[in-house]
Image 1 (cartoon, rainbow, N blue to C red):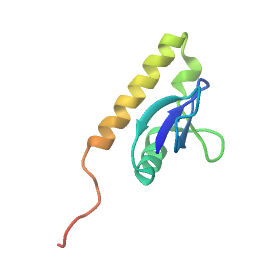
Image 2: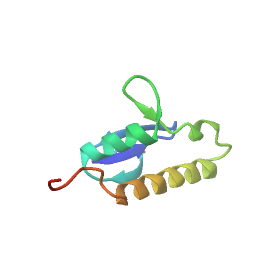
Image 3: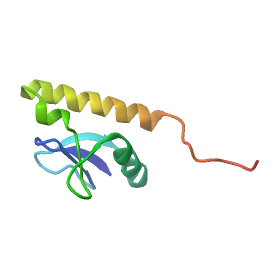
Image 4: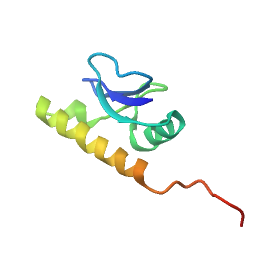
Length: 88
C-alpha cells in the first residue's frame, strides 16, 4: 500500500500510485492507516489532508512540505513497534 498526496493536499491510501499523485511512503496497509490517522490532519469525512499545502506560496514550498511529511512518516515507520511481544 502507498500513502499518496494530491496537489490540493489531500492524502489517501492506494494499492498503486495513481497518475498525478505524489508517492509519500509505502508499507503494510494496517500500519499505514494508523500512521495516517495519527500524523495527518483530518479532512472531509473519512479523508485526511496535509494542510501546509493549502497555504504554501509556491510549488517548491509544497514540495518541501510533502518531503517534510514523508520524512516524519519514515521516522515513525522505522521506530519501535508498540506491539507487545512475548509473555510477561
